[in-house]
Structure formats: C-alpha cells, structure tokens
Amino acid sequence: MSDSKVKGRVQEPNVRVNNFNEVELGFNDEEAHLEASRCLNCPKPRCMEGCPVKIQIPKFIKAIKDNDLKLAYEIITESSSLPAVCGRVCPQEKQCEKMCVKGLKGDAISIGSLERYVADVAMKNDYASTAKKESNGKKVAIVGAGPAGLTCAGDLAKNGFSVTIYEVLHKAGGVLTYGIPEFRLPKSIVQKEVESLKKLGVEILTDVPVGNAITIPELQDKYDAVFIGSGAGLPKFMGIDGEDANGVFSANEILTRINLMGAYKSLSKTPIKKAKRAYIIGGGNVAMDAVRCLKRLGIETHLMYRRSEEELPARKMEVEHAKEEGIIFDLLTNPVRILTDDNNNVIGMEVVNMILGEAGEDGRRSVSEDESSKHVVDCDMVVMALGTSPNHEALKNSNIVLTERGLISVENSKTSLDNVYAGGDAVTGAATVILAMEAGKKAANEIINALL
Ligand SMILES: Cc1cc2nc3c(=O)[nH]c(=O)nc-3n(C[C@H](O)[C@H](O)[C@H](O)COP(=O)(O)OP(=O)(O)OC[C@H]3O[C@@H](n4cnc5c(N)ncnc54)[C@H](O)[C@@H]3O)c2cc1C
Figure 1 (spheres, rainbow, N blue to C red):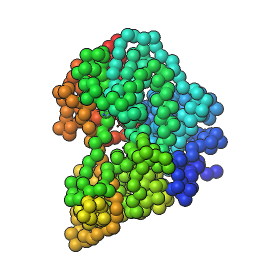
Figure 2: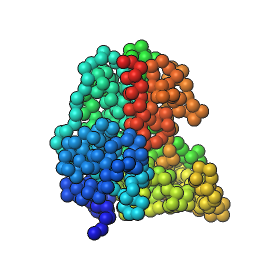
Figure 3: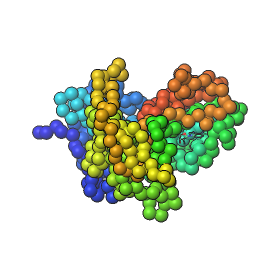
Figure 4: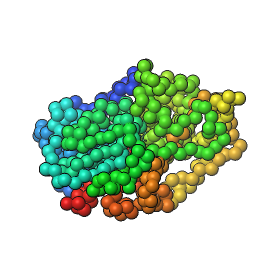
C-alpha cells in the first residue's frame, strides 16, 4: 500500500488567478484521518525538536486519529495561540516536517495541514478557551498588534494581567493583516484569533502611533511593564537611479494597499493604478506575495531575482504556486537603473545578467555582473521586495539601547529600559510568525516572573 502523503485540495491555477480566495482548501475529515494515520507516533519525536514553540505534535495527531478534535485543539493551544495562522503560513518544510522520520525515506507527515485542519474545526465549533486566572491587579502595555504582541497579550491575559495593546494601524494583526495576502491567509481567520483575545479581556487601541501619540516613557509611568513588538516594517531600496519615479513601489506599500485597504475590490477607495507590465525585484516570500497579488489584478508580472532558482529564499510551495499562476521568472538578472519619461513615469529598466560564484561562509553563492550583458526591458511598474528593517518611530524619546544592526537589544527579552521588554522582528530583524510568537511567549513568562 502506498505511504505517500495525502495531497490537500487547491483551487485550480486558471481559476485562482482571477480571485483572491484561499488557494489551499485544507483537509476534509477523511483526508485528515488518512494523513494522521500515517504518523508513527514516535516515542522520541524529532518533529517537536523542529517546532520553535514545541507543540506536542504526535499527541495532537493521535487525538485526530482518535476522533477527539477538541483534545487535539487543546494540545496545540497549550503551546500556540495562533494555530489557524501557523497551520497556514509556517515554513513547516524547514521545521517540524523537515525533522519527521517518515521524511527520511519518503513523504514527511503534513503536520502543518493537520494543525490547520484542527484549528479550522475548532473555529467552526467555537472550541476557543477563554479560561483565565483571577485579576492580579497588574497592568501591561503592548506596542504593536502583530504575532509577537498578540501572543504576549494572550499569555498575560490568561494569567490575570490587565493588557492594553497600542496599534498604529486601524486593524490588529501586523503582517498577518497588512502583508500576507488573503489567498494565503484569509483576514477573517486573523480577525477571529484577535476576537478570541478580546474575549480574554485584552483591550486593543488602534490608530495610536506610539512615539507620537504616547511615548514609551509615558507608558512606563502608566503601566507595570511594557512589551515592544513593533516589527520590521521599513522597506529597503536599491539606491539606483530612477528609484524615485512614479510607478516604483515597495512591496510593503503594494501589499498594504491590497490587503489592508482592499485595493483589489471593485469599490475600493484606494485602487492601484493598473500597470501593463510590472517587475518585482527580489526572491523571498514578500516578493512572491507581491507578484501573485499583482497577477490577480490582471497585470503582466515578472519576478526578477539576481541568483538562480535554487537560491530563491521563498518557500518552495509559493514558488510552485507562482509558476502555476503564470508568473514569469527572470532569474540571474538585476536592475541597474530605472528609466523614466519627461514626467518621471517609469518606462523601463536597464538590467544586467548575473554570474553565480562560489558559496560564502553563510552558504549563499556570490554573484557578479556580466558587464557586457546590459540591456533594456519595457515596464511601467517596479516593485522592490528587498527586505525590511525596524521602523523606530515607537522608540522616540526613549533612549533604548540598540544593537549595531539597529535592532532592539534584549537579554532574556528585557531591554535596557526599566520594565520594558521586546521581541519579534523588532529584535531579530525580519523573521517568521512562529519565531515572533515564541518571543512574545518568552517575554510574557519573564513579565510574569518579574511582577508576580
Ligand atoms: C509579505 C510578507 C509575507 C510573509 N510571509 C510569511 C510566511 O509565510 N510565514 C512566516 O512565518 N512569516 C512570514 N512573514 C514574516 C512574518 O510575518 C513576520 O516575521 C512576523 O509578522 C513578525 O511579527 P511581529 O509581531 O514581530 O511584527 P509585525 O507582524 O510586523 O507586527 C508589528 C505591529 O506593530 C505595529 N507598529 C509598528 N510601529 C508602531 C508604533 N509606533 N505604534 C504602534 N504600533 C506600531 C505595526 O503596525 C504592526 O501591526 C512575512 C512577512 C511579510 C512582510
């Protein structure tokens, strides 16, 4: 009998390029049982070593086999407060599934899809637990409603703290809301997770720019502790000629307009001018999200990356999906300058072919330009997806100590300021949802130990 993994259903590429609905449709009951029954329930589970928040993976999968989905949900939520999110966007192939024994000789168990299945069933049936300890009289302020801030808030609220989150945008969720597209992570799922935090008593104040409307020192005066989870939302650019032209965007701006402001909807008040041909520069998940969003707006979309397909940092699955959707990959190519007309509108790019060299200490192959290969490509939109760094608006007037890389310096989640903790992308630089959640959890534990 075949022991291949059960393939989840997906929307067909020719259909999904015309909508923003979720691409992956998830397991139904039968598929989930079949996949769960492949798990060996190893007594020494390697998969857990690969999970940053140490979910009891074999135990929750056994509960699926036993048809006890409530128990499966309880087991997952002991360690993770956002399972419907993580089941969808965690890079499982580099974490739990990479370590799965079954993967040594065949297909690893689809742990992420099983986690998502349990979380979706729990949401449908309202399993969410709102159990919490009695109030301990302590107040904590959280800066930023991304995965780090939300996780820290949830853990503190469950332990009897009064928690207030200050969020600059008009909706909570951080990158989950403004960055990751609807077709990978439906916003209704993020908002349900946010609602369950509110049920725990967490107060979320939106449209509040910390650093301006209220400063960190003011929060220190008002609260017993402060957690900073302000992320890394400042986009990087290349510094080439023409980058200030009309038609050049950061991927963050494009994704925020589309995901947070709903620019893809016909009645949107913030529509994106439809380009004829767009080049998205970069090869990570952000580039993949931006290029796939623009394709859905009916634009001819090219992804330009300076290394080869093998080095693409994006998740393999996202690359496959992008290819199926007809994204054109221009690999081993890099922009030299952006060309404009008299009104400073983008009309094309001068680009150069790249040559791969040896791998450096970090394992990444070096690249150099093939000077003789410079040529021009026509386009009317260029989107830079080159990574992000922390935006320090929140830290104004605080004298908080930063690292050489400009990240918030922490020791055991504690910053240089009294009773101020930090975690997530603001501390690590752009990373992943699960690592931000782990940091939020750790900081919550430190706060509990310090204040109780
Ligand atoms: C497009 C995109 C796709 C991604 N895809 C994946 C993926 O598939 N899988 C994965 O694991 N990771 C992915 N990531 C990375 C992941 O989303 C981040 O690592 C994670 O969201 C970091 O969480 P955080 O809470 O530290 O920060 P964020 O999610 O950035 O949240 C920070 C919050 O703080 C708020 N804030 C900032 N400044 C202030 C201020 N002055 N006052 C008040 N509030 C403030 C912001 O508005 C934001 O809501 C992706 C990132 C991007 C941009």
